[in-house]
Length: 88
Image 1: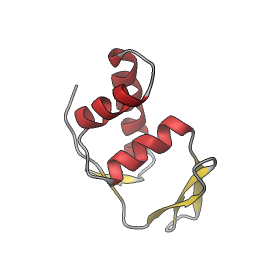
Image 2 (image 1 turned 120 degrees about the horizontal axis):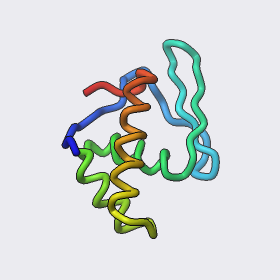
Image 3 (image 1 turned 30 degrees about the horizontal axis):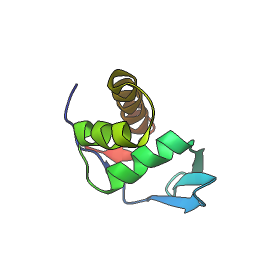
Image 4 (image 1 turned 180 degrees about the vertical axis):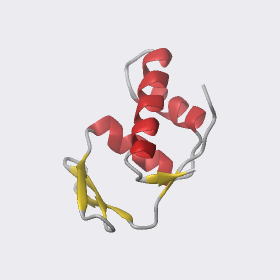
């Protein structure tokens, strides 16, 4: 697992509530609906946590194996990069 640290692009904002969080790419006006886990990962990215730190945080909060969490975090971070919502 890499220990990459991503940060949100300056023109991406979080909106909505904890029950229905959204990310809005202000530059493109694109809206992204997040599930609970993706929202938690986004919060950790905003806090400046590395990938391994995010895995540790989620391992304490969710009832899943570390391997499952590691895979989910890596997949989510890859998707955030692919969507252009973060920079590394």
